[in-house]
Image (tube, rainbow, N blue to C red; front, side, top):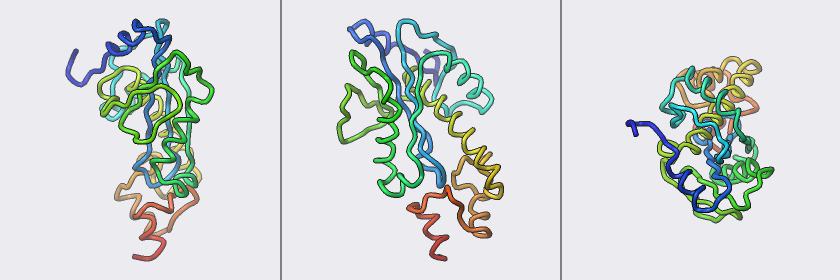
Length: 206
């Protein structure tokens, strides 16, 4: 395996052990100051089309992510989201759990195993395995990370047309210098997460 390149070795082992599919799951947007958390679930099975150079979305260029996402979406996948009001009400970790459940809602998880990137303390109702940095190791999680990242970036770019001063089309809601400067001048907009410290500081003038 090349450095910084995922493979599907774990997925193939799990399939041969009796699972009918392996569902890679990853989220995007937990650290963003605006917009939803987006989760993608990528279904890996014996019929999956394996695409080279699939990796953690953060390790890929925008152009490469978009190309890979289009190819990966020829396979079975699903998207789940938790909106900014849910993030503010629940906290971002619980909102991410909610988005995961939504992404898997219409997927048959019986006789399948879900590979989750990261660690979740409270159990889910489906069979799963948490893997730290799984998006940089395992094909199905990396595939989910690419699909989720491109989906959310495109969504934030659309929000950028409605709220053009914040640079959402380039920062996806994250805390760039341009974003902070716009917040100081124009205040917040409807998609900002009110529970996040930088937004609280703007709201309270500190």
